[in-house]
Length: 245
Image (cartoon, rainbow, N blue to C red; front, side, top):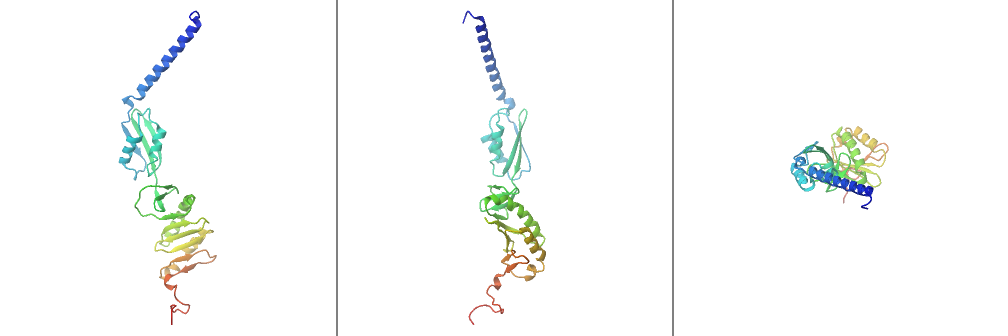
């Protein structure tokens, strides 16, 4: 080898290249970890009302490490999206030491059982909440459809001063609404919106005039509906209450 100058030259070039690579890597490491790029400021933007400053500060201490150069943006974003009220997070670096975090929070629309909430996109999530919300029920995959239908039910019933407190759909796609006051509307599986519209259209001259507590309204009839009134359940056709003479 020593008597082959071309081989010596190639070896020398390789060693020089390796030395330059190592020197460059070392310099980049020093720069990347330099205090100049330390994260001095974290700005949180978005319509944030549920996520607290304490939660953000704890997350930054626990899950966001390194400088602005070495920060794993994907990992930091995933950490923010694990917060109970965060639906999505977007992170951006602003040199030399500011991190911008833009959060989209869940907006609670309803409850799903005892421990789960439904947001306005019809997505299920878990978060602490003690406010008043309607209750949805049915197969989990139906949550988005129920959220869409709820908005129609709510606006339609508002015309007669009633509110849907519970909305559920069965595995056979049969819809049911429980109103404020306890009345249950059975809508069935077909023509759901048309049946509710018919109920609303005649409400003031039928249900509202009965002046009795209505337990159940069956809207599955083609041209009308049936009503169950608890206090009349034990009244005989002649008008006398059933019992011993």
